[in-house]
Amino acid sequence: MKTLEQIVESEKYIPMTYLDYQLTSWGRMFSDISNKESYTSNYAVIDKNENFSVIIKEIEEYYNSKDIIPKIFYRHGSIELNVLRPYFDKYNYSIREFDIELMILNIDSNRNNKIKDCMMNIIGHTLDGKEYNLAVEQDYGETYGVKLLNRQISAGHNMFFAYDELNNPVSMALAEKFNNVVYISNVYTTPSKRCQGYGMAIINSIISYYKNSLIYLHTHNPEAASIYSQLGFSGRIFKSWWAVKGKLPEWCQQ
Image 1 (cartoon, helix red, strand yellow):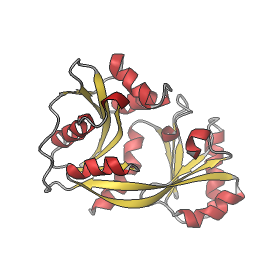
Image 2 (image 1 turned 45 degrees about the vertical axis):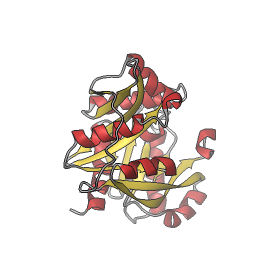
Image 3 (image 1 turned 90 degrees about the vertical axis):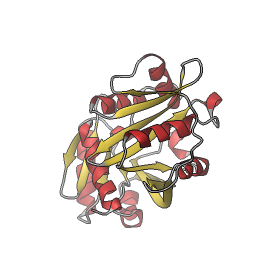
Image 4 (image 1 turned 60 degrees about the vertical axis):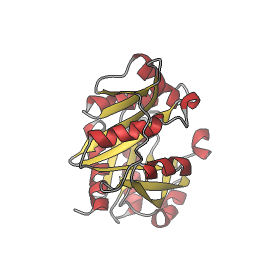
């Protein structure tokens, strides 16, 4: 199977391991009524060219029944925005467009051999203590992100943490695995410890742990992309988007 086809498949099936879902003839819908504020827990994907008015009505019925704002996201392989935009305008959806770089690890490439030497830990249980606090810090004190992380961990995915000289967790990332595909997300380093090699150490640890796997991630940060390139990733920029019923929240407009 080609690389992008594997990624499309992983993006479809990985969320099924920890979210409620409904598969349809045109795509899929994911939800978590215990975490309604999490955008990455509640969204639909349209990947077949069918009657879009009917599809949007089905999406709205599904999420309205759960008291969740309907959201439709782009995922690799889904219908392009230029096709769907007239329907989003008709049904009062606000759109956020952004560039995102898909970065895939080249297993045969030479990695930066000057990786920071620090304590690492792989956590496969519910986050608590300082690790929990770091995960909440990533979302500026909100807990919807850590609630999702704990569901992902409970489904068998792993959190990786790097620690400073005082054994405080200062950097983290999530690795989700489906078949032989590993997706890295939630890469975060506390501000006071950035540019010191902890983030690179986290990604390198994941690469070492999942040897011979297809490993990929997304970034919209050129500086982060440069770091990932040093670890053997190469990238391609995609146009991505979210469509949200009604008005976008303030954080989503930035």
